[in-house]
Image (cartoon, rainbow, N blue to C red):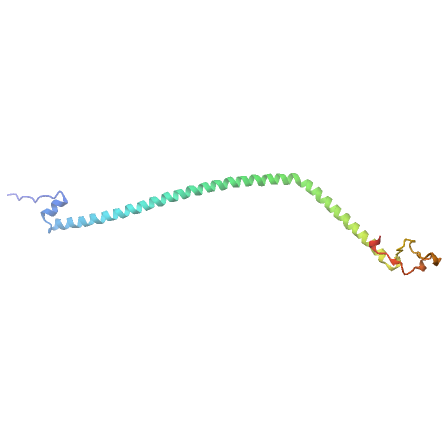
Length: 170
């Protein structure tokens, strides 16, 4: 005689109904625990995946704004480079004229310095005791007495009203 085969469990519920205390029932309980753990992990994974997608979206937006900013900076850089180039051309065109002006200024400075030296030398001549010049406050004549009663036209007859000339008097 052939022994009847035990029924094959096709569904987990069928296995539990057949023999919950037997080895198949223990496997079913283990499988159910694993299924609950898998569903919990799946929910956590879904949350993490959503956070990653949100972060990706946020980063893409930031990357886009950075790319736009970089493009604006490149445009500004090009404009500045053009301005620098234009300024260099202007300087190159103006440089000969500036050199001529610089040479003129140096010549004028040299002339002014020479003129000042001449003026100082001439002023020093009048300060020298050997070349002392006197002025007559009444306008009677240089080196002469303003008093007509003195009868002398000699420079030795200087009166107290005569004072030495200064550079400002000239």
